[in-house]
Image (tube, each protein chain N blue to C red):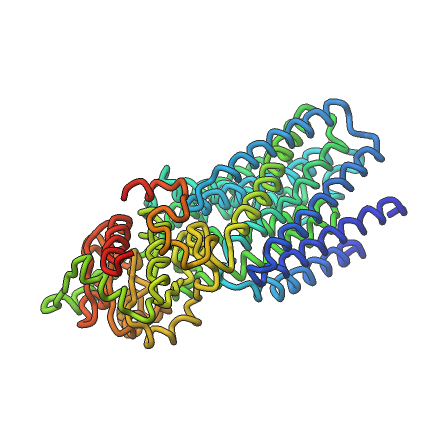
Length: 119
Length: 471
């Protein structure tokens, strides 16, 4: 076993342990954003896809580089954007302070939601 | 490794450190957004340094740059569009699609490595290792498995378990073919063997997920997430990149932990879920509680009285609530009750929804403050103090039968809804949950059934409460 491989394996095992330690502390409330965040992190495979370009000089190489770059970019961009979108919705307090809907019944928090229309 | 390469690796480690810090900040909703930003920064660092490396190296051809840039741009547009437009109820499908493309890209990295190195001087065998074949296998299985999972969640493919005759034998055969060709690949440079590994793995992914039922999706998505992470880590071994190895290991750990949590929350082993869906051979236990059971129906006005004059109400949402798009209505009902001084909280079972934590996101979207969202262990002791437990669209996770042995859900951790002083269950009919058994909660003397579609029921309850309190 080469030194490089031993180094790689060491890094892998330690990262796995760090991951277990860090992620074990994430509350269930955030499990969906967590999974989505993990999703965006594995988008780092984009780096691998880009590196194909270093040596790709054949049609097959170009096709593989294209598909890999497409997949990985969709993964990484989509992952981060949707995670951010979800986390933005988690608020400590409801946007209009809780008593507000009582003063302004019905559409106190005018949302463009279909359920508002049905009443 | 020369100085330049070493410096590049160090930058990848910096990026990986950002990922760890980012994940760490997700331990609280208050810091989670910053966590995502830190993680994004790490990713930008990793991509930029890779571009620096490509430019510095100077071997990327004009065509090479073109395919990379167009591919990445198109991918970004698709990713951005789907991330911006996805409905929160469709989140599991999107996560599954990201698993698919991530795993697919990881597999392609290894496939390219093998194809390219075959033509390189020194041949393929010097650079091909067990990590190459593991990357190809895991990446391919993840790709098709996640596509099937997304199809099931989206309703394109039936959500109920699809049992293929002799499916297990086919799976074993595919696994043997994939592993056999993979072993051959390691000792003999052979493109046909590589192709065989890819095809067998793709087919295995399809057949692995098809027999799994809709209610088991939280486990499947978590498992495929772990697979993707592992595939990316393997790709890191193939191209000797520490950034990929660390990031992949982190995701593998995250997916692994969630898989275990979800499986525990359903009291089922992973093997049991993979082998077959619920409702197979459990029919005999159903008869125990039916017969003399009394069902009490309740009208909106009476339910509203109970809710409005309670001091503590616990809402128990299930997937039925999300399916009926009633989460915004529930949030409004809760707001009205709170304005009357009622203490409202939500009891969230770990498998409420179609992916880990799904229900929390749906309620957060409906503007429910996260301190009201209580995990099972936190809320269960509070049911005894609740005047009313309002169950909407949840079934099996509230069934006290889980506490006894000999039922289909025995041992499954449940919400202690039956401890509440009174219980209102909103449900369309007396239909069964995924476990296919009667829910003993419905025949409890403290329980009233409110038969209606969740969305309509919640709207009616809200207006009844408003009328009652004169708001």
